[in-house]
Structures are given as C-alpha cells and as structure tokens.
Image (cartoon, rainbow, N blue to C red; front, side, top):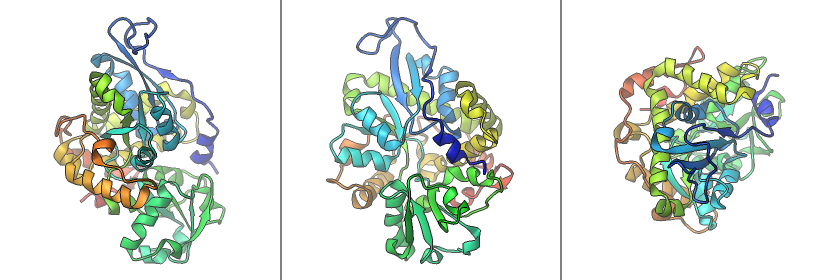
Length: 374
C-alpha cells in the first residue's frame, strides 16, 4: 500500500531550506547579517506538507525579504519537539499545535503564541466504513487507534462528554504513530488523526473512503499557530511583527488566488523540497492536504477579524478549554500564553465566499469540511 505516513517516516532529515534574501555576510550575535537584514530561524511542526506550502510561498515571493528578514526553515519532529527547541532558543519561530504549546508553557517553558494559522482544531476520527458509524454514539464499543496522551487523544477525551459518550466507552488501541495502517491491517475500527490528512486515505492502494467525524469543529477553539519566546516580543518586536506579516501574506496570497494559487503553492513547495515531490501521488496528496487545511482557516472569526488575529471571545474559550482538558500542570493565563501581533482585519481575505467556493471540491470529491463552516 502506498502510504504517505510510511513515506514521511522515512524522511529522517531534510536539508535546511535557506532563503537567499539579503546579504551573504555572516550573521552577528543579534541575528543581523551585516547589511540591515535580520537572519531568523523557523522550525516547522513536521516534514513539509501541502498545508505549510504558503510559508514557502512567503519565502519564494520575498514577503519576508521585503520586510528585512532572511528566513531559514527546517523540518520539525512534532509540535512537542518544535516547542522545546523554540523554548531553549534553538530557533526564533515555530509552527506548533496550540494545545501542546500551552502544556509546555504550563510546565515553565518560555513560549508564546503570536498568530493562529489553523483557526480550528484539525482533529478527526477516521472510521472504517464497514463499522457502520452514523453518529458519535456508534463509536461506543469500537476499537480506536490513537497515540496515548497526545493532542488527538486528549481532544477526544474533552469532546466525548459533549457527544454523549465516555472516553472509556472506546476499546483504545494505543500505538506509536496511529494512522491509516491501523484500519488497513484490521487492528482498529477508527483512527484519530488530522482532518487535513484525508487525501492519504483516498490515495491509498486500494483507496479507502473513511467515514469522518470532525471532532475539532465541534470544540470551536484555536488550532496550530506561530510561536516564539516571550523575550522576542521585547528585544526584537519589529522582527516578530515582520515575520508574522510575511507568513500571513503567504497564506493570503494562496487563499485569495483560488485554485490557480493552490497549484502554484505546491509547485513552490516541491521546488524547495524536491524529496517529497518524488513520492507516489505526491502532487495529489499535497494539494489535497493544502486545500483541506485552508478550509480549517476559513471560519467565521477569520471572516470578521482576518488572518492571524485572535478574536478575544474565541481566545477566552480556547484558554478555558485547554486549562480544563489539555493542560496537565497549572492553569495558563491569556497574558502569558497568547498575544495578537496583528491588528483586527490587517490581513483580510479579499472575497471570503469566493475563497470557500474554490475549496468546494478536493481531488474531485466534495470537500467534507465546507458544509460545516456555518
């Protein structure tokens, strides 16, 4: 079976992607390259996928360079690892799951969320169609595959009572790297994974058309975003602002440009990451992954406030949810955990309805997320 999960796990390292923007001079201790250009290091959450292609668009089109930044990107090894590396100063900025970051903050790691990317949690249950699940109640008694204690596992624990079931109603199969193989091998009836990874299932050999319950949409809190150390906000505030602006301009370009820009973003992703372009069905997977992830961003709070802006009411809900269900240590306050670098509507979508319309189909299938955007 041609599985992207297996192929990604074989990518034990990717070369550092460097932006040739600014001087070739060596950087001094403050990150200045000597010509007024600031060198910054950006750590992704995992190996590059379509969902992070807009970061490479920002790199390629000079959105960071135009703001005086020379950005170097490197892969991550999960949100926890990225958070740890940013917290100890191995990088200036990271992209990571908000729940994981808040746990690290609770444990004393110096981190702050500076802009949402996914404005809702991507966690979903992928269900074997043979299980006959039509509602959450039908999950009771089934075998569910999940990485014990990770964000997907904890999100299900938080969601279950609101769906009228209990976490312990599931026969959990705890595994390292729960994915499509758990169903393909007959070890589980459903798997907890990100909704944007659905194309992996569609492109399997033979294809799997799972039933899906998008748990994150029911919860209504912020998902993955950009992070840095709090010290950056006081010592290099202009750099933080420029970095967030450049990243959002990349996503805005891809969203506003519709399907043509989606395709262009994948071309750029492959240009900087030729290894992933060589995988079977690579273009289809990464394009579908990007389009589903963009759908996660087009919620009503983004229609109102624009990209990269934390709506105060939703932020309060996010903090309450995370403190109650996801954070294992002391509660985290909004002042220490989140800050909006961008002003409201600073990065508005040009035509929000047109952006949603461009995502109505994914790889020739109806997008399962757009009917849920409300």
